[in-house]
Image (cartoon, rainbow, N blue to C red; front, side):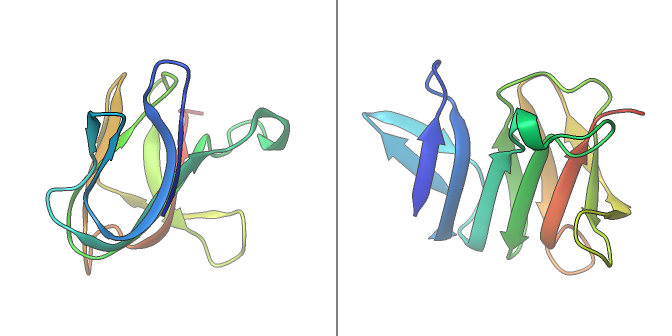
Amino acid sequence: MAFREDAEGRLAAFAGHNCQRLTVDGREHDFADRPLAFVGWAPVALPRRVLGGAVIEVWVQGEGKVTVPLTEPVKDARLFAAGAQPGLAGAPVTAEVNRLALTFEAGPGKAQGKLYLLPAP
C-alpha cells in the first residue's frame, strides 16, 4: 500500500490491494463500499498534462462502488476507460463527478482496469 495526502489532509494519491478504506493519524478515508482486489489513483503532474488530457489516472480491479477524492475541481469532467494505445482514452464510463469526488461502479461490464478523468473539451 502507498498513499499521499495533500496539504488539507485529503487522500491525493493511493494504491492498495484488498482494501476499501485507510486510516491515517485517526482520520478515516473511505473509498469503496467493499474491499477491492486493487484500487489506485493519482493526479497527473502538471508538467505531464496536455490540453484536454487526463487530470487523474485511476486503476481498479474488483466490484463495488468507488469514490475517489478530488484535490482540485474539474469542470464537467468525464471518466473514460483507457484506449487501445497508451495515453489514449477509450469508451466513456458512467460516473458522477462533483467538486469533491469522483464516484463510479467498478466491476465486469462497468469500470475496470485503467481509467482517465478528463475535463470537458
